[in-house]
Length: 272
Image 1 (cartoon, one colour):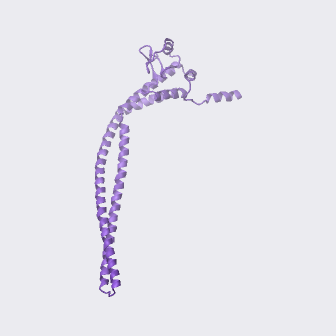
Image 2 (tube, helix red, strand yellow):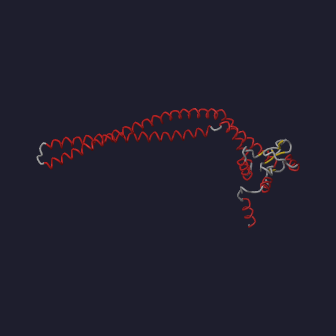
């Protein structure tokens, strides 16, 4: 019973991203599928991934450019909405200032009407002061209106410039999207078939080997995790010389061979 538990714990050992090549080779060999078949599957997986990479490269920077344009346009639309809201608020400020002017002018007329009925010089002086204050408030409101109109004109000019630029960028986005859609459409069937082939290969490979494969692909610039022998005696990934003994092991396709220099899996593509 204790032995069974021990074996289960060993089988459930999590994948260590830093595991040694020796442990990976041992795991690769311990399988119902032959090493040669697993190597052939890995090679087919790499071929599918390489073809998918070419399709992605064909799209170039278009996906990133489309995303950047969409973000830029969204930002400009927010700015446009903010400017429109500012203009509306400034217009309301002018309307309020006009109401204030009408109220102050009405007070001036009322105070002037009261002047003819006052004989007391003190009250007369007080009303004159009130009239002067009301006229001063009218002037202040008129200045507010003039300054606000200048602000509105500036905001409207900014809004027009923004809308013009927004139209240009929207056209750019439409062109980029159209170009990207054309490329995606032209490669859609091929990409779908390659992805199906990739999934089929990946399903045949154990989790530990698949993890190592993905890790190697992510660590090298050309994303080649599985390579053949270059020029008869070198690694097809880093072009470092391979020893005669390891070349024999690679030719036999009976062992997982990993390049000591770049960490790529080296196989013999001639499985026949």
